[in-house]
Image (cartoon, rainbow, N blue to C red; front, side, top):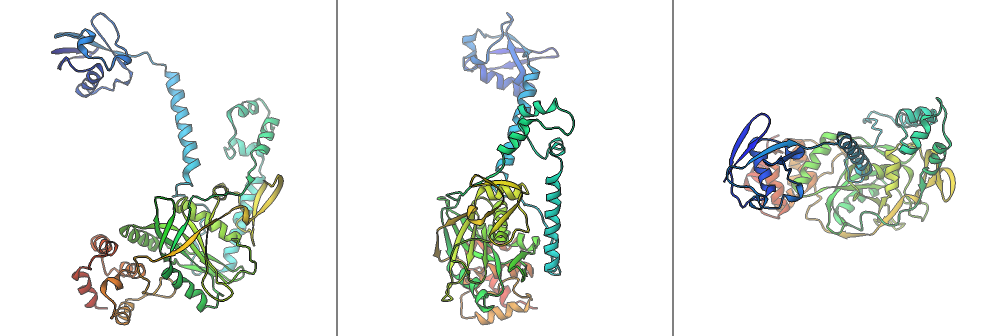
Length: 467
């Protein structure tokens, strides 16, 4: 049947079936006349508006027949309600985004001092001290000014009480609310990761560096692997970024090389892997208590914020016998939040985290808390990765193209599959631009991942590579 649809500006003839429903008729009109019918209603010749509840009813049952005319009328709109709902939705989305931003990864926790190899330990410590002083200065500013600038967000009903007071005045409601919302430091029983499967060969290569330096040089690395459906993490290899040892405080500052790290992340994606945490190795602990130092807690929070709530911290610390020992941890959600909110002093030392403002620790107001409040122990077991660890580890010394010939000669008895299935060697090939990241690596990594025979074209190029 033919239905004529009239607006104030035009009329459209539509040929439709009488078996369709009112809702389907709406869709036809919207598509044909390119109208958004969210705020438009349909009215028949008798000026009767059809209701949204009738959208499932067939047109024939609603009195439509061949030649019927319907009119499109604007719905009565409560614009204030629409604006209010829109604002409430925006606020809700913003709160949800802020609440879960750190939880799902991708958040860079400040500050980034852009440390280089030439930055001295004294300069790094001075940068941390200056940052702490600036945050302390901000926290000591008038509460009124911080409220006005949005540095502190308080509930709407308390804001209303505050509006009636003069400048630089605070209502008791605000003061009480601030006291009630002071962070209450508590231990988190369970982490987001239920366990770690750690590649033994990667662990041995990492521990060998510590042992060769008599454990005098601490070392860190990023863990790459996968997150399993049961919320456990599998670690398949360790990437060691450029880093600077701070000998006075026996800690390590990572020199972020985004170009190299992005290459490693891209290669890991081709292998079906992703960043899943970090590892730190140092000399044996004097205390038997399994605690993370303050700088390790801060770095662990950064890693969990950046790589996701599954990310883990592994500590490589030898037993008294010298045998490698690995322990796994996560920091609590509260630790990540405190770092995100710039509440923790970077100059925290030992096993204590210091804060810029007092917090509630075991019902008492304090300016610091022990590391055991922030740590969660994670079970760890050893597994064997599909990847190898034969090539020279990155950033332990300079790489050059001659390393390729040395590597191939010293491993000539090994198969090509074993020689190439090494993430450090793959990174070398990418950095030296021997293979193309765009065309070669996707196929090469797919063959490694699926344990297939390496294409002869790749092996031929490596055998005949000219310096």
